Image (cartoon, rainbow, N blue to C red; front, side, top):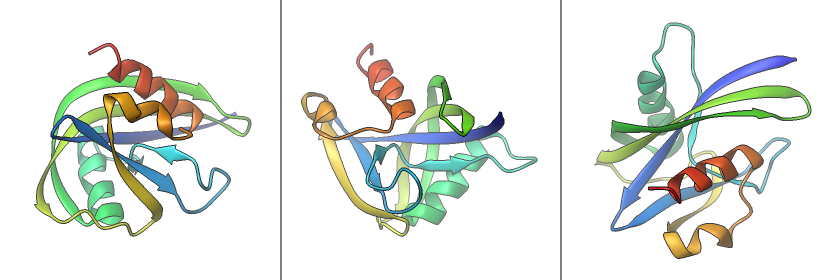
Amino acid sequence: MKCIEVVAGIIRDSGKVFATQRGYGDFKDGWEFPGGKVEPGETPQQALVRELREELCVDVTVGDFLCTVEYDYPAFHLTMHCFFCSVVGGKLTLLEHEAARWLSEADLHSVEWLPADVEVVKALGHL
């Protein structure tokens, strides 16, 4: 089975987290924490800085590690490293996603998360 290593950023502000809705691919319309693939030679933190700049036009500092999710989708195995992030420059602009929402803890279950991201939501609930 193909293995894909990705990173996801949990961007927090005023007690809410930033969630994005995929605008393309097999999982179009599913909700996720923004991020993307780790390129050869990158650390997960470097990949997250690059991916959030490419997807959302923001510069971030990568903070604490939250969790690593291992998830088997039908066509591939996903390893997703999740970190808290803070926006330090730019304005959140959707370049690859069709929608975004700031979700409070009470609203985390109001969107249809992608299966691997459900595990991140569970990890957030244990903070």
